[in-house]
Length: 396
Image 1 (cartoon, rainbow, N blue to C red):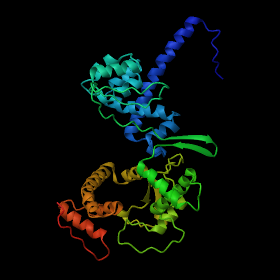
Image 2: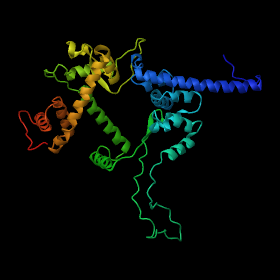
Image 3: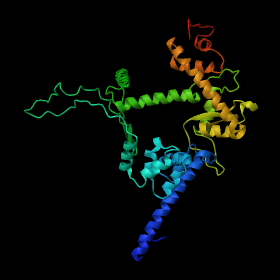
Image 4: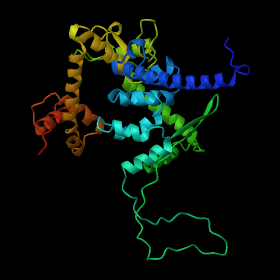
């Protein structure tokens, strides 16, 4: 076991050792950031069963969340401008300076900014930014602030000769906070909109007989339970009374019964495993993936369907079909989504519900050469009752 007692070490040796260790730490940090950047660029964390670079850094490298996020941000900038690595290694810049200057880094400014920001701390960097990249002055304004009245005095009144007041910007909404109070209870604090508050009051009224106190905590618990049930039904067709589904002509269609069984079998978690046997712990952004691809004759059966998080689903597809092929597929999908987005407002104006409008727009997005009016007409056919065709008077 190493001893950290230095009481018997000569003073000059202690001083020299501190300098050496500090220099070594800076160089090691710069190299670590370079490694993190390379791992992220090549997505080397995916074969290790990590969904994201952040999770890899926290689990494998033992970094705290804030430390990992800072190094990832710095790595992305420094990979683009390698001189930043050298400035980090010799202590001219620290990670805070790199992050603060992030909006202003470019190939033409990197040398000048490194020289100007060298050895400066956070307040000095902020002043440097203000000097070199000034913002517009804030508008002159007089804002009435609530004040506690002093007995025997009257409230001060601003004379008309003062600068005309300008409507202040709305105060920044505090970030939601979740704080553990005990092993079984949490404090949750967030800002609610007027619409949400009105809905809360309405739900309290509806629960008047069942929950006379209107306790907000119990209302929220019931609301979350109802939302979870709704999302489970949408995500993996959860139901207490399953029915036999009708066959679909779409080879990519996955029957509700298959979704339920796969979700239960896989435990609602990504099934990707690394070579060492580590399983990806992702439980969000999950997708149903065909083990034998549809393009190769794979069917939507329980044995051929598995749960995968989106990054590992795409990673597996790139291994099978190649990255260039999948990049082209993603570009086509992005273009189709853009074509679908311009149809949705027309459907909404015709009274179609948001979710139905989105689904109908996606169905007609593949018609790349069709006009907007033709795509709206086709989308409306998917929205109407069975056997009914809608034709808008004008769609473009």
